Length: 568
Ligand SMILES: [Zn+2]
Ligand SMILES: [Zn+2]
Image (cartoon, rainbow, N blue to C red; front, side, top):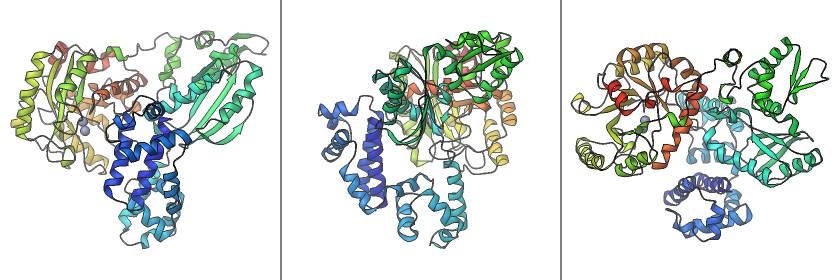
């Protein structure tokens, strides 16, 4: 329900923006969406108990609208707005560079309603004729559409929806087990669609499929059968459900988890052993005898290998390693000893320095680095010399009262030409410095690489934050020459960050796979709220998918060893 409410409020805000309504009104809906995104309780329960207005930024008008959505699954207000502008037009705002005003113009002046329509207008040249649309601007829009079309969603953003559907299927009492497979289970940073693997009694299969297709989240049934059904959800994501009997549980979830390249290789190995593997089990050649099927461990053992953790199942050598019993001992969240990237309300963070430090201590960590922005970029409300001194004093006072070790750090901008905006006079007094790219994302690979290499020349820089600056909801990563960067990081003992923010998850696992032995790497949450420390899990996913053991990740070190490493 929470997702549905958030979606409807967001649609209202988008439509108000397209209609050119007051900034104040639009902002209040955006703020409500932001607040509800942080709510962990069930919104429908809060509505029933009349507690919506206790939430920050939710007043009378919006709380009434939420109550209607909770009760009816829809919003009259939203329906009223869509009589003026079709809801579809809001989809244009997903294209980077297109805001409400532009979306409104595209609709009013060209009749463009959808991204497909926009592509058509580019093709026919109609967009270029619109005032204000230069060739450069149109090209940028084209690139943004290409990025969007990948239709990949950040795993953290769909986790709640995925578990919600799983739980509802379980509550139907028609199935005895429902599990998420696919790239979701392999913990990929982004997921295109969901795969559900379920166990039940055969007489209930059809009833369970009917229940599935009639769930309120489903907007379209793409194909349905007794054993497999595919539907489309309200957020345009496809979900596959396969049901089988308990005997096939292990083989079924193995098949559902993939990756395809992994399961295909397993089948080839089965054939080589004169066996047959499918989604129901491992059999002898003429299928007269079932050899293994109940658990994944049984099936892997039947093929002569040890159990392979889902994150590794990409056919990147894991099958060969499992046959030799040489799989890595993957890092876990419990190996992490501290966080090295966190902000406070001295800049764009939302919690005080004290709250952030105590929050880190409550995580059981040995250390935390407070790394607020310093520089000229106003959107981060950056520190200046005066604010920095004030924070330093505050930090010293808090540090004395807590057990956790606190590093006073900074996150500073790498300029277009690789300079740093902060003088060494200031940097030399800091415990720890992250340099990050926050602007000019579209330069060629050579220039981007040079920017970072030049930043690495500064002796006070300890780390490079979110190295490729990708944001799944916004922009693609830029290309970097990572072999050059890794080499220099190694020479200068500068660390590369795996930024664990859900929308970033940067650097990607396919890169860390190689980089982990070439350059020092740490995981940073880039926390702006205390609860953002939970993001550490997304960084761990990347590390596990990259075959990292705890020896590969800097913040698995104790504070004592970390301090030794910090001297450049
Ligand atoms: Zn940053
Ligand atoms: Zn940051």
